[in-house]
Image 1 (cartoon, one colour):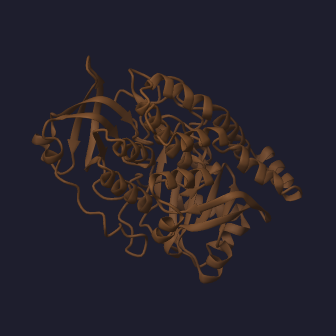
Image 2 (image 1 turned 180 degrees about the vertical axis):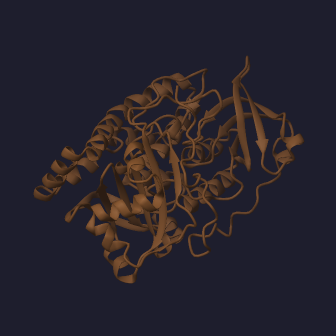
Amino acid sequence: MNPAPKPCHPAPESCHPAPESCHPAPESCHPSPKAEDLLLDRTTDIAILGGGLAGSAAAILLARAGRDVLLIERETQPQHKVCGEFLSQEALAYLNLLGLDAAALTTLGAVPIRSVRLAHGTSVSHAQLPFAARSLTRRTLDAHLLQLAEASGARVLRGTRALSLDPTSTGWSIHLESKEASSASAAGQSLTATTALLATGKHDLSKRPRPRGKQPNLVAFKMYFRLSPQQAAALQSHVELILFRGGYAGLQPVEDGVANLCCLVDRTALQRIGGRWPHLLRTMQQDCALLRERLHNATPLLEKPLAIASIPYGYVRPTATDGLWSLGDQAAVIPSFTGDGMSIALHSGSLAAAMLLRGQTPAAFQRQLHDELSTQVALATTLSRGLLWTPTRSLFTAAATLWPTLITTAARTTRISPTALANILQARTTPA
C-alpha cells in the first residue's frame, strides 16, 4: 500500500506565504464561523471532506437541492496548490453550471488560453487548441467556490481536518481536529453523518490510502514568475509544454500578469541532477531554449516552490469502499500534461451530487465514474510515460514538428467524453 502523499523538499503543498504581488487572498474571504457554532448538534445529513473543486461542486449542487450539507475544509484561508490551473472547455461548462459563467470568470481575472506550444531543445511546435480554455489560480477559484457553497446553503467549516472516517450502523463517524482549537479541545471533536463524500485531493485520509497508481514515482513542483514584459506578451493566450530530461513542465499565464510554471519529474532523474529545485530549474532551461528565453530576467514570486510527491498518477478507483463516495483526486489522478485534472474534479463532484439526489448508491457512482474516466486516464498515462522516456520523447517532438495536429489530437483524446459531460449538464442534478 502506498503511504499518504507527503511533501517533497523543499516545501509542502500548502505554500509559504506568497509575496503580496502574487495573488493575494480575495478580500471577500472572511473567517468561517467557529466550529462550535457549525457543529452544535454534531450531526449532519451529508459531510463533505475537502473544500477543493470536487468537494465544493458537490456541496453547491446538493445544498441548492435543499440537502443538509457540511463542507469540512482543512485550511482557514485560500492556498496556492500544486496545479497547472488550466480550465478546459469541460471545466468551464461545469463552472457555468455552478454559477461562474464567462463574465464572472473574467471578473476574477481568468485569462484565455487559445493555443499550445510544444518545446524540446531548440524545437518548438505550435497548434491551436480544439476548444476554448481559461487559466485561473486555484487560490482564487477555490475561494470563490467555497463562497458559492455558503451562498447555496452549505455550512462551510474552515481550518478543520478529518483525522479519521469510520463507518457506523447509521452512517459515518468523523473525528476532527481544528487549527483554531487548543490541543485539548481539538482531541475528541467528532460528528456523525448519514452520507460522507471524500474529496481531500492529494491528501489521503488515515487508514484510507490510495494504491500506488501506474506512474507513482514523480515529484511535482510549482512556481509563479513575473516575466519580463516582452516574454509575458509572447506567452499571452498560450500554454507551453516543456520537455526535459526525466520530466515535463507547463508554463501558462494566470491572472495579474503572472506565469505559472508547474512541472513533473521522475524521482530518480531529480536525484541524479542534485535533488533540489535550483538544480531542476537549471536543467529545464538547459534542455529547452524556449523556457530559457521565457525566464530571462523573470522574478520568482514564491519564497520557495510548492512541491509534493507520491501522487498515484494513472489511478482510477474501480469500486466504492464501505459505502463512501470518493471524488476528485481520491477517485482518479490523470497525468498533469493533459490539463484535465480540474475538469475531472468538477465532473466527479457534479456526478456524485446528481446520483446522490437520484437515490443511487456510492457503488453505482464509482462504477460509472470508472467507466467514464478509465480509458482517458490510461491513454494519458501511456503518453506521460512516453514523454519521460528519451527515445519516445524525441520521436514525439519530431512528429509534432511535422504534423502539429498530433498535439491537437492528444489534447482532444485525453478529455472527459462529450457524452459524460452532456449527461451531467442535461440532468441539472434534479431528483428523479
